[in-house]
Amino acid sequence: MKLRLIWIFASVLLIVLAFSPPVFATATQCGIHKGNEWRCAKDNYQADTIRIGNESTRRVSFKVGVWTSTCGKKGSEISNGSFSLDPGVPLALPLMEARANQCVEMFIYDCSPDVCTKVLSAHTL
Image (cartoon, rainbow, N blue to C red; front, side, top):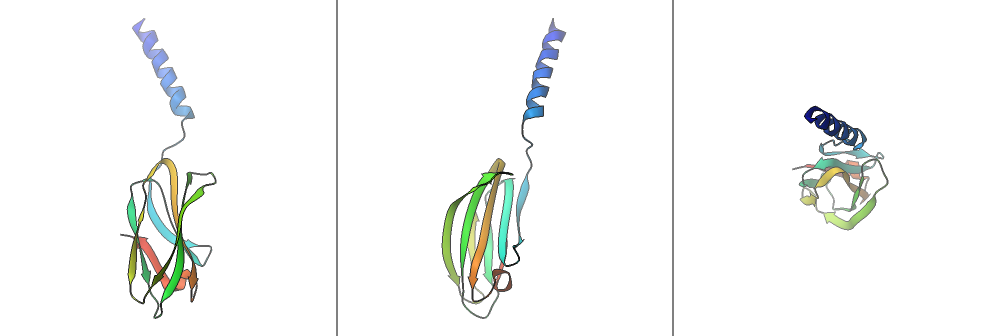
């Protein structure tokens, strides 16, 4: 009887695990997106901070949007803001925690006077 109960429990556990979505953890990584903007993304990872630096000799204005989604599905924007940085001045922005099967992305885009990847740097602190 005990063996049969253990077998039933193991079978149910195996079925639950087989149909549960995978849980991966990816630390926040920033990279070039669409050739002219920055994208910092993570899934199932702790809250952290993104450092944006002005690498040009002029004041740079830009936008930052944060999106969240169930990984692999269309997400929604949860915040958007406009910023300006003087030459050599960094900006530190928090990026929220991503839970299991949740993706969080920060986009740095619409830079002026040049494309974002030429005038700004972006990486985790």
